[in-house]
Length: 448
Image (tube, rainbow, N blue to C red; front, side, top):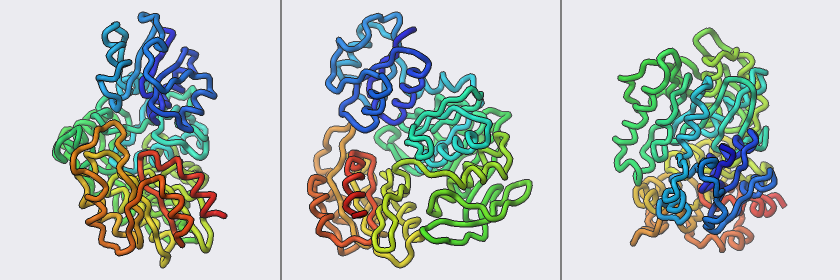
């Protein structure tokens, strides 16, 4: 095999695997629907990308070409039809990651929210501790400006994505489960099926390994052979924080308790109580993976976060701007509660772009409840991603249920003009669609 071709190369998980093969010296190319900062970066690294389906751009040497695709791309898309008809070797992104990780000591982080920050923290710990690791991340590390870390170490850190049951391709040595909320019901159908998938993932952790589960998370552990540990930020667990003290800018200092003792004066390089919780999970995974507790927290004090994960772009006494990838009601509620704690007594304005028609349909009431934790809400139209419109499903399903009085529903093209006239104190943008394309403009506006 000399060529690796990606259908949907611009996705955060796909792009990490593309970078992996490109670094190994394969000829990497691919298709994505729209250009982005991520595809621009891949092109700058020597990867050929086109944005209109073009079967002639696919390497013609079938025997020497591996095709990797994302399930977010329709099976009827012409390039997918072409590679199947021609007999290319074709694998899903999840299968490719499973194969890469099969010979490594793998630490995997699963959960409906928190997995990107936690896996990025774990990768940072191993890197800073000198052990090194390779890492396939679901976001761009702000310490390393990439979603892929490469090392000669046998240690591999992976974000274990539940979408399309992708995480069932992984058989980790150490796993973290941060949350098992209902999500991706277009795939699973019911919350019970989601929970069944998480139980299966938990059972796939090696019998000689470790499973770390957030305290209170619903999970059937009946088939788990690994040793099970708990973590939390609000009371006793195997790994937890106590004596939390809020410092300026939303940063925390606390004591970290672990089975062998405690470390006082722990801090993270990022603000927010939700990040403390993620840090506890990351430290637990690293410790069970062989890193000393002291080295873990020394590393986490220099952690700068992942892009679009409680990402503070402006932090002044009069103006704050935070961006977050949250696109599930529980994520939004957690982020807003963290922001409230970070900036007590201040007025919070939330901008939200719903992601997927099915998710909007399934969770409209929950979205409204979570957004109502803000003082004011700017709601945008639904970002469809891989879906076709569903009759009767619009952002109004959420908007009409939001309880705060200061709320407005607008098209995304109207957002910047509205923000120019709106007096905001703490502004936060949420969404997994293309709202990220407004981050630089909003930062320039708020920070001016």
